[in-house]
Amino acid sequence: MKKIVIAAMAALSMAGCVSNPQRQAMMAEYEASRPTCEGKEQCDAMWEHAQVWVANNSRMKIQTATNVLIETYGGGQNSAQLSMRVIKEPLGGGAYKIVFSGGCANIFGCVPDAMQTGMEFNRYINNAAE
Image 1 (cartoon, rainbow, N blue to C red):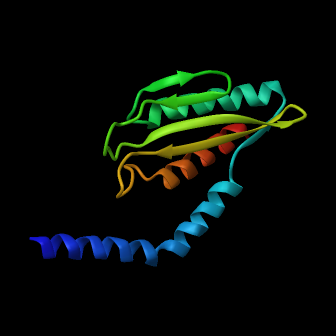
Image 2 (cartoon, rainbow, N blue to C red; image 1 turned 45 degrees about the horizontal axis):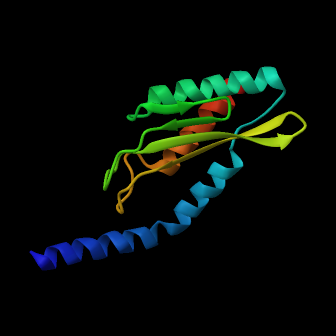
Image 3 (cartoon, rainbow, N blue to C red; image 1 turned 180 degrees about the horizontal axis):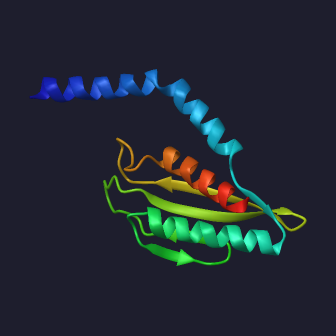
């Protein structure tokens, strides 16, 4: 039994190394696609869409929702459930960047994947701004 567990852990660690360049490309795309807004009307509309997206796409309930923060509850110790946080960061001159982050307390990753979910969030908010 120990040999099976060790083999499975080795396979998982190697799989992480193989997909590292792909993961880096995803990270670059995620960061480049972060939504930005300018002016009260556009920023309020995008922020409202962000809250609705989190409410509809998170398996966790929203814990906090203010004019600069949307945050869900966490899943607890060793949970793979993705918790979400969205922050409206000021860029100056009435412009803001809307930043999604997600995480969990599981060493094998989150369900759903935090990076993929962040990219979906960015696409949705950017499309809502059009």
